[in-house]
Length: 209
Image (cartoon, rainbow, N blue to C red):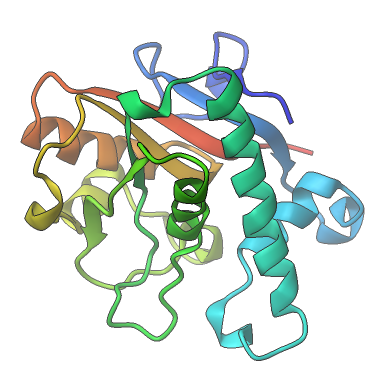
């Protein structure tokens, strides 16, 4: 997969991104009928990443672990060849469930933790956490999806993670859709650390199939 930047041709697919946002992605994740997309390798990758933790004891769980490892490889290749990872603090955008919930899924954190095996200067922090459980946006079939403001109000900075934070932060998530979670996370960080540089990095961006 090749890293690409959200530009003037792709930004309109993501309603809440602006020209001032520096967001990057590796691949395009097709929306639409799962039966149509099931042979698409990126669709399969994201589908496996999103396997819920209640399947942990099932044979299919290995595919989630393989997907996490595949994403780790892509990030390792990125930072080995194009970026100095020592410049950044890597922050996973929080999942929809709190750590108190048995369905809490830290897949993005696990992807980032894997980088520490390669890079001694890799700084990964769960800087933001979710206060109350919410329904994942991709499961919101009834009623409107949460707004940036609603997501922002449900985020909290973990002050135990703030010491010596780097002045460049990369917010990481698996799929970029409208950009609501990215904007909520960006807002709470920039309010806590004025002047800090923030980028977004996504395994895939969602596109209409």
